Amino acid sequence: MSRAIRVLVAKAGLDGHDRGAKVVAQSLRDAGMEVIYTGLRQTPEMIVKAALEEDVDVVGLSLHSGAHMTLFPRVLELLREAGLDHVLLTGGGIIPEADRQALIEMGVGRLFGPGTPTSDLVDYISEEIAGRAKKGGRA
Amino acid sequence: MMDAARILSGDRRSLARGLSVIEDGGKDAIALLDQVWKQTGRARRLGITGPPGAGKSTLVAGLTTLLRAEGKTVGIIAVDPTSPFTGGALLGDRHRMTREASDDGVFLRSLASRGSLGGLSRAAPASLDLLDAAGFDVLILETVGVGQSEVEVAATADTVVVVLSPESGDAVQAMKAGLIEIADVLCVNKADRDGAAELIASLEAMLDLKENATWRPPAVATTGTESAAPLLEGIEKHANFLEGEDRLANRRRTGMAARLRALVASMIAERMLANSDEVLAAQAKAVEKAECSVLHAAERVVEEILG
Image (cartoon, rainbow over all chains, first blue to last red; front, side, top):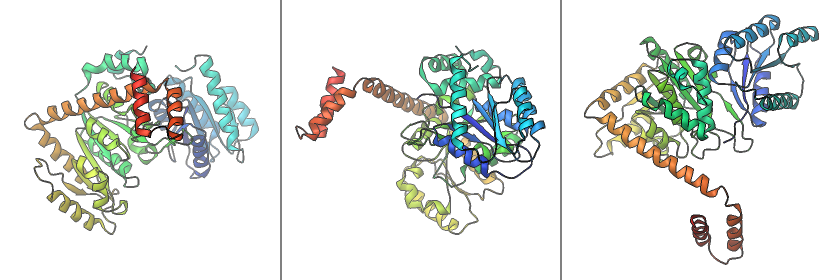
């Protein structure tokens, strides 16, 4: 019974485009991860409550509404307030390169644009989590 | 080592970490459960099971709303199957109850069955114990009724609800699956669909045939979109029944004995088989060469393991 990587896949914001999130959720499952899919219209508070209760390693935010510069930092802030600093915050959607850089500087992980092969995301998460485990990361 | 005191005092982050410790099993899980064991037993435990697609998650959401309106706190463990091919799992109950899950008086944890043959995560009963000790008033264990899982649910829940829908097959199939035997409440969900009345009638007919039963499970009808009140009423009827004549205590005693036995059997098998690959391979060859039957080969392996 070895511990699988637990990932929360969340749709934040008010848009209803969830096919990408569902495809990602299935790919992560096929890669052996345990995926909690939260559904549409999640607020940052709901996302962090779920991340806490499910003791996830990763939160993946799917955003198509253009609100990424408010939502990512807000989720990051709430994760830190909840004592979940070790959680990797990643995600994707339509996010311009300049904004991605700004978010990475704040502490958000790599972000993935539309059309990225899901294997890239799987590899990124696997490597990141393995790296954190070596550093004794899980709080 | 986990600090149980914080869990017992209501800290949610510690509770979530504690649930992971329980899930990972081993010495840490044992140590943690030891620390909280005396605080368990206060919460009322409900088991919700049934075939996939019957609408269990929606009903759990409805029950949670009603229980919260009564001022009760609710802890939920939702179990979904781990893929035997990839080892991964899509845990989809949370997204069916996002409103209830965002309530501070509700704690929802999704578990993957993680290779447990019966479909019930081995950690599920101990996870309920931790939620119990953490102070939640009502605990709900939601799981798909496959394999032996419904027997395990019955051993750990005070009231078992079996949820069926007109699409999930007829009453005879439910009986074959053993679901009717373990049900304390039968719930026909999606009761606005064709076939619901017939399903209820055939369930009642089947229950009529059961002799010597002190408890006849009520067969309630819900639609999933309206209130879960008919289901909660059925559950409360059973709760009242259990209050008489030490029934609850007896049920819990029997259930705990069954749980202990199942854990021991599983742990013995794990330990005994841990270093037995060579023996097994050798005997498998003997069977293939027709030196003996597989029954005999199994006997030989066991005797060698037990020394």
